[in-house]
Image (cartoon, one colour):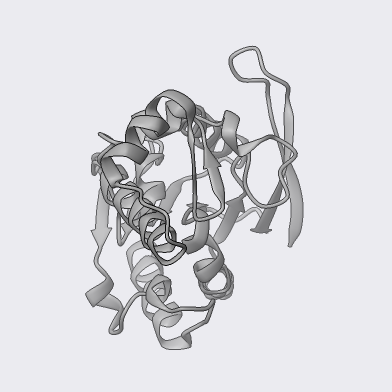
Length: 225
């Protein structure tokens, strides 16, 4: 279930090896799952794997790769770009011979256009940035430090920025400011309302919800039946 996957050197960089969670029995339907990012990744990790268990029981292979710079990656997060993550997603799709993609939250910005599939509760780059910048300004205010969103983003565009404990490079900040998810042909959006409950990313701590995992799994299983 836990493995690694290899990413060829991108843009003159060093080839990388990242962690992978997968249920691979060489079945016909093979789903690439692109995870939520940053704090939401922590809060949705258990939920995501539980969905994969349901897919496995229904005869669907699934693959959850770490992106470069995330989790146990040896590649610095500050060096990552949105375009680099898109290329990594394309490489993952080819490496696993994926037939479909499930992009969770901000990973809808990365989903390979060639694959049909789903965006679950897709999040835009600007909305992601606003939330992370807001969290930093609130923490700064509580510490007696004056920071504004405009000032922080100006710094981020030129020097990069640490938000919620993650240091994002200048190129990533600039790209996220305008990045919007698009539904490629054969791709469908899944709203949180279809899972009958608030998103787990809204909770203060990582959690799970079997009913929501059942609901998301059922949507995919029914479509691939």
